[in-house]
Image (cartoon, rainbow, N blue to C red; front, side, top):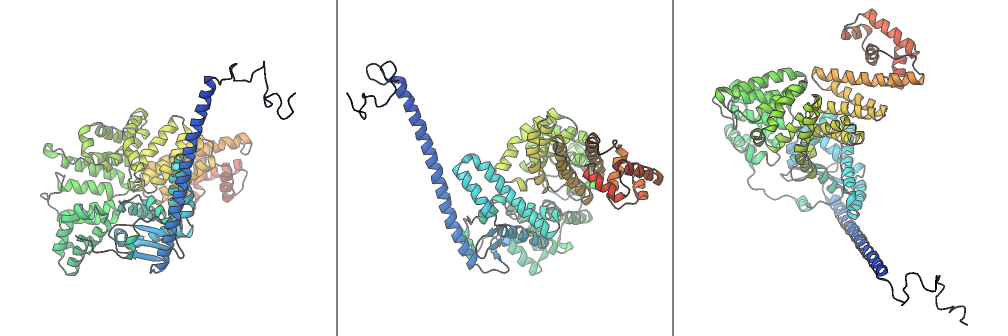
Length: 615
């Protein structure tokens, strides 16, 4: 008899019918059993290789981060600085935060020349926010996760983007001027054309500089046109400086992101030395920098000294060029109707005697119509231009994306959803390329395009896509030079949040839209649209309050309008004048409102209405 350890030779294996499972009578392992084990081994091998690659990638990144952070800390400690600021001689616009003990903010002379002196404090506040909040500690884990798992790269990009917006908010809080911060950050991003704005700042915060050799001092740069202009101005040779500026505007200043430097030189020139062609070039440059005041100043010089025979490259008529730039960049959204008339006049003069005209003048007319709230006319004109290969080929890529943004917004507002979907599909490669290259902050046309895309998702009842797209699109619209784009984005966001049942978020979006309308000059249609959205939110709140028993009966639209007006400081007489009502009618409405809300004072009425979500 076999012993208990040896057993019967089957090792404790359960035997059914006298043979082990999976073993043939002859003792051989079946083919299917071998094949199954081979597949398992292959899967295990592939998984092991992937895991090993991820571990190696993380270790490599950790090692590189440790080395670069150590080097950055040493550089920061050794840099001579004043209040933590280091200025390096470099024509390339650049600025970043360098962590260390102590940390430093490094700014190139090119960036200082690009921004106006009044904008330097905003740039420093933005970079100081990176240092003070240790933003590199947030970005590093996200990038490490992306290195280990490529599927996390969108998350790392989102973290990087959020960090930059965090710094923007800190700058806005410290300076107290959100609009100026948005424009300054956008201008800096536009100037720093060598690398994406937020990616460069993040890389610097992590210590991955890649260009630390410059910090010791930049060597001489050949062909320094800006130095030549500076010395000519100091020597009193104003005419020579003006000629050198005009000759090198397109070939030297603009490609180097030195538009602000070009403008500063123009301010130093006496008016007698500024020829109409140079004045037009300076006006266009001021438009690129978002300086409406100097756009109009230089266009005034054009009109005062210009003659019909002056040649502006690409334009048939000098006066039409001046009119088009003034309408597009020298006037506020509140003057949209006048802008339309000016561009129409420019189009007539540009196309007289059968001339084809500048390729942008018709697109400018479409943009002015949209700015004035005439979306159906704008959509018809811009869609015709978009569908014409001749016109589209004449547009530069930046204008093409901007035209697509204005067109899609106009189509959405005009109720032409199918046309909008077609343009969105055709413009998608351009928009994706901008985001892939990290040029979102320097491409104004992207914001309206994404806002229109989100609105179409809302109209197609895809609330998840709408609420995912709109917050980021609205953040981009904060950098847009025109408040109308931001305003519409906020209205669309409020509608999407309300459809999802998030009334506090919808109310917050409308509150921000009200701030935009009150702070920025806008056309009359914007106020009408805002009042419609506020009334819609108030009606929804009133219905909810009635169903819950908090309100005995619903409020009328007029009552809601008066209730919203009670939030301000206007007297009952002023409220009545604004609504074309007598003071007795306003008093009667107030009495009815107090009764329905169960309050006895204006303050209590406003407080209760806010608690109920009516305003």
